Image 1 (cartoon, helix red, strand yellow):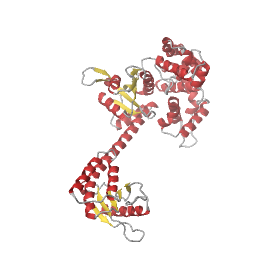
Image 2 (spheres, helix red, strand yellow):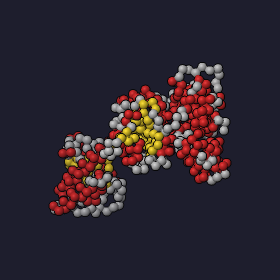
Image 3 (cartoon, one colour):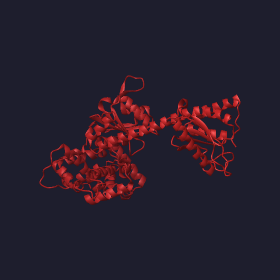
Image 4 (cartoon, rainbow, N blue to C red):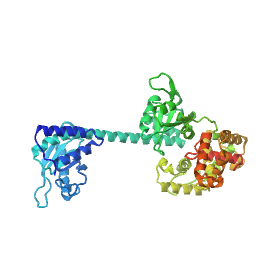
Length: 522
């Protein structure tokens, strides 16, 4: 039974104080409706202009004495009466009314349905009605309580609606920004620039890519700090693959900020880690917009170093650019490897064509199974596309690291082809021929030099065995005769020496496999 309603000023003051307290809660609308249902002993509902029931309280109370539960037949009938009444009131612009409830089991009218709009100053447009069905109280006693409740509930409802719309706008903007990043990652720079311009932002022509590992649920806060420090000259995207990562393209001219109230200028990465404890930041070298994928991988590899750095941040400093392999022979080899995919004609218009398949291949090589989140496709769709790519390219991409490395290199060289004249060679070269040039040898030794200089215990041999085992850690541990944690620890130390990520995607395993193949160690 609901609490007996009273007309005294003391009881009304208590009700107003209770409403003020409930209004401060996180989900204040639901809290106030629950309180009103308990206070009146009736069913409380919010009903929209089209008669739709937006919320009820109590939500599940069948059999509770003194209440009319929404799940019970009488409750459903009463809600139907309230819905019809609200549609009529909305059309007439009437702010409140009392109507007879649904007939009970004996055919007589049920409890009254009290209705009042939540619109400001009695306006009915754009606001739902508060309905109280079957209360144990007189109409006059209830009208005072409803008037007080409606005023507070109206404000709370508008606040919650505004917050819901803010989240929707934020969600839409994040997806639009993600679409721009995706276009940059697949090489569609003009399209990315057009969409960014339509969103009111500009993509820096020359930038550094930041990958920020955010502690807790602080991506939004860190994004705001980067925006303020970079004075709007940054394109910030919540990572679509990792929920605690933030990706930022920051103009090289906007990479310093002031720490606290000091006038000294400090690098943006150090500023972030100093202000956000537990934050880790990896920063790429300066790259043109068209090389955003390269910048992202560099920043991700730098992040692997930042996790163990005292400052919590690190920059990608080594110049071991894979484009040194972009010779005419290398580009011809890449075109030969990817040719079956580039010439593929899908049997149905809805099936993925060459651009989508190459995008899928690149995403899978970078993120593995997490490519489903990057590409926004189902895992079965990803598996089907990978099977098709295996068939077209004649590779075993799911199991053989050598085939994965060859496909990765072919994609890199294919991406550079647009900046070079068409390759004219006597005949298609093989992978070993592409890796046999003096430039490839220099590149390969530069890849492995940090590992060899660091003198990590069996570091170079551990990496070689791991690569030979198709990057499968259990098989590598067995071959080395050590435990699985021991092998993982060795590879973690190798990551620190190389300044590259090995065990997390995107991994440097393809480059290391190619480097060791070029030096005939695999």
